[in-house]
Length: 133
Image 1 (spheres, rainbow, N blue to C red):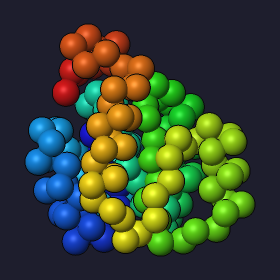
Image 2 (tube, rainbow, N blue to C red; image 1 turned 135 degrees about the horizontal axis):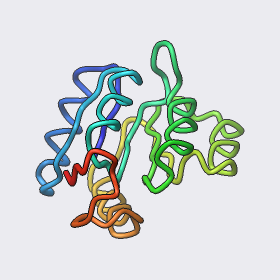
Image 3 (cartoon, helix red, strand yellow; image 1 turned 60 degrees about the vertical axis):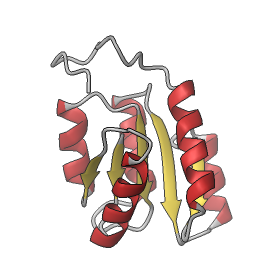
Image 4 (cartoon, rainbow, N blue to C red; image 1 turned 30 degrees about the horizontal axis):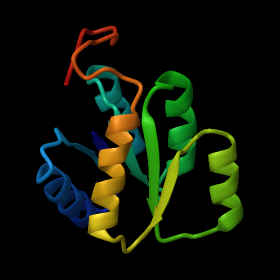
């Protein structure tokens, strides 16, 4: 799982929360760092903040959709611009949108569901580097 958020406190809290469920969590503080993780790791689920410097979360997810279409992409944001969310969902850039502050129980349940729906088999790697986790 990859979390992308420029707020180090949010990264720490989400990483700890999701590690409780046994996920291997990669934490990136920029979109560029997120792309680096994606290039070297098999990532099934991505949780990304919308408001980041240099590239919004939706812009990041649009690129990810083209490069890694089998990933399950989730935006987490304090910004609730309904049209932005609808456009991102309708274009297929994201599958889910959650607001900050989030409900930890609901987020964990939905991430568990995302992994169960993910199209990337966990035991087999089609990644060009042969990375499985």
